[in-house]
Image (cartoon, rainbow, N blue to C red; front, side, top):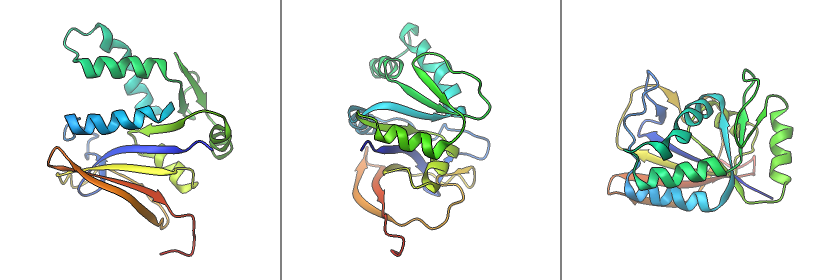
Length: 192
C-alpha cells in the first residue's frame, strides 16, 4: 500500500506560518534541500490543499523562464510540473495541468489513492489538509523540520487534534541549526 508522507517546516513553537501567514523564516538550506530531494525520490504524487496549490500553481510554472532562478529551483520546477498532483478543495471548481480535484468524500478518495499501484504520495506545506488527513488517520509518516525561531502564533502544525501518539523513527540536525524529526503514528489506540 502506498504511504502518505508529510514534509513540513515548523517553528520551535509549532507553527507552519506566522500570525499574518508569513513564511520568511524558513529558508531551504543545502542540507534541507538534500533531505527534501530524498523524499521526492520516494513519491510519484503531490497532495495539496487549495491555498498551497494556488501558491505553487502560480509560482513553479514560471521558474524555468526566470533568469534569476537557481539550478535547484529549476530542477524542482521540472519535477513539480511532471509529477501528478491531487488538490483537495470544496471551493475550487477545476485545476489545471497535471492535477486532479477532489472535493468530497476525502477519506474514501484518499483510501482509494493509497490502494492504487505506484510510489508514495507527499504533502508539503499548509495546515488544513494535513490536519484533516491526520484526524482521519491517513498520514503514514511525518518529516518535521523544526527551525530555531519562535513565532508566537500562526497556523499550528497539527491544528486541533485529539491525542495522537507518534513513534520517532529518526532525528538529525541539518545545517547546524534545523532539527528534522521523522515520525510515524502508532496505530495502537491504547498507547500513550
